[in-house]
Length: 142
Image 1 (cartoon, helix red, strand yellow):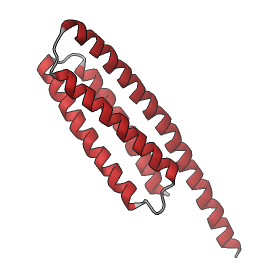
Image 2 (tube, rainbow, N blue to C red; image 1 turned 180 degrees about the vertical axis):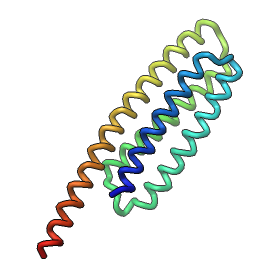
Image 3 (spheres, helix red, strand yellow; image 1 turned 90 degrees about the vertical axis):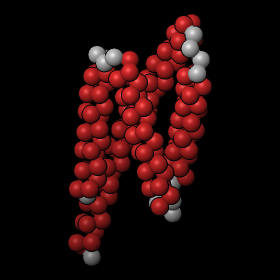
């Protein structure tokens, strides 16, 4: 069970690191900020690939609900990145303002999704702990 607790702690560490990066980015120059964005995207791509590989490995055990959530999230990320890539080529002051508003909205949505995911992760870990305790108790009485 400690591996679930460790994974949950790692999630909290990721949140702390992301928060520090966002705070630091507010005082960085444009080139530094763009570099941070590129780095964050590479890391997100890596995490997504890891999650997809893990889901593929566990597909026999995974519920279709989680697979649907992953598929929906992947589609959302693909649409978001396609829009971002297309907009990078179009630099116009009016469009830049609209793009900023969309980017801020997408960021808020990603934060909301992450918050919901954290709540689900907490629930899943606690539920797993209860299930393990029940199984151990039943094994002890057998």
